[in-house]
Amino acid sequence: MAAMLVLVSLSAFATPASAQLLPEVTLECQDSVDLDVSPGSSRMVIVSCELENPSLYEEEVELMYEFGELAGSGPDSLTVPAGETSLFTVTVRADADQEAEDYLVNITAEVTSASGIPVGGIGSDSDEVTVTVPEFTTCENAVGQGGGTFEAGQKVSFSASITCESNTDSTTSYSALLISDSGSSAWPSGFEDQSPQCEVLVPDGGTTENCQFLIATPSNLEYIWEGCVILLEVGGSVPQSCPSTNAIDIKVEPKTLGIGSIELTGNDSVFGNYSDEAPIIIGGVVTVLVLAIIGMLVARRRRRSG
Image (cartoon, rainbow, N blue to C red):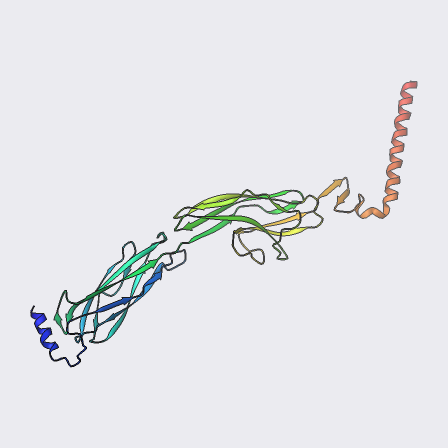
């Protein structure tokens, strides 16, 4: 009561007719902010506030916060000159596994003294800030061992481990992608993805799952195909070339059949590089077969005559 009487006495000397006679404070903060908690983020956000003193007195203002399920910090008090506005910021923080939803942060300002005279319960104001934690799902994949050189018609198989983090229930899918050494990501003619569906159900918090992949190569391949196979999350960007890590390098060659020292390769003839000498080879083979037959007949007659 004594403090009130002093303030009323002081106000009697105030010249501006529109000036606030009693201690008062006005608090205004940002209406809403987003707080990113995805991996790699700071998991914090800054809220800007204004504290206005419309009274005739210099005011000492106490600041109080209610962060609820979040955490944060801000100044405990501010001194605001008469008729002026002071700016301050509040830091709001969240855990890495904070669920995606809206949270309310309440900030209260209360005048504790005016012109050095303690007062209480006279001037106060509060404001509420909506802090939105957006949804996120991030996944990383690690392909297993595999790759090497394959013959046309063989199947390329490998497995992959997929680890996801999320702050909500979500689903993601992966598929195999071939990238040639020339940089083309179009599936070559005759190559076929025969992999079972790789769909990862990600619960709030995250999970790790394994997927199997199978790529069929054409049996009638007429050229050597070289490149790599990677995993691509559905909707992800396609790389322009084979990455240096987390990829399986493969080489697929046309079928090669061996008959002694004579090879059947691609569209070459049975004689390969010896097509010009084909008549001579054929004649020699026929001669050997005829002599072998004559020898068998002669040996049989001798056995009979004996």
